[in-house]
Image (cartoon, rainbow, N blue to C red; front, side, top):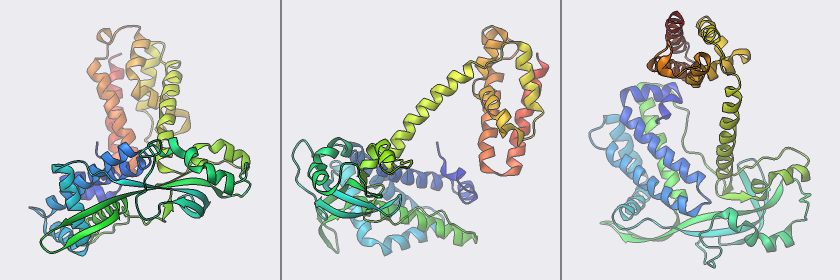
Length: 390
């Protein structure tokens, strides 16, 4: 479930000392990432925004109670340095928990963009609400950006762009922004303004995580370089969807090159489809190459028990190895032409083979030689025991 501690030696060390802290950091980080991905899907965005507000304020409150001094001090200092943002976000969290979901209003900006990089764009010509929420008809309001794309850009398409998009690096697009009107007071201040709620929530939460990491690094005398906060341009790969995100094949023809989508949500959605297709094809291919005999099954056990850790991941062995680990129950049933209850290998032993093999694969990704060799040897020991039973 939790992946942050596997991402670096820094988080592995932090997780060993403060496992709950790393888990709560990951919850905040994951909510922020989901907010980015769902940016152009209003329903999901609203739900993820409320989740981020709750997890961020929970993290602050937890970190200043019964925690190590370095953590308590770091969070208190950060909160005091960003007191206005903290008070606003705390108010929004309280509304979300005790009254109703924080329901931001949207603005839509459509026009001609110039691509400065894969993540940064410049709006050259456009129409829309730049610094406040807009008022839209029922067929545009709170719809997925992709679904209203052509309706919003009809005029811009006629006025700003030739049919074959001959200007390289320029195309039409829509930027969405999310605003919230606040009006409340606490013991010392009155807050009455309209704010970019996405920008405030994301900046506060990511810089908070960075402050905690830097404080731990200073406490232990180590380096931290995996910053959570990244400054974005006003128009970027999260808040803007371009034509090339929706139909990249046409842009590959128009611009005579391989054009891929840039928008984060589009890429994640596309990647999920690709993963589904890959799993489907992988299982189909693996099924056609199962062991046909008990001798073939034992030969695999012996082959893999003799490989070095590096040899498992060489091109000639990798597909066979991953198939044998993930689909060992299929290999066994095919090899012995029987149910798992009537083979020399017990179902629990098959499950242990798969578990040890997957641990070895996961450890290999860490690039830590000591744990890779240990996981590999545990896996190979189990293979040898199974081979002796056949």
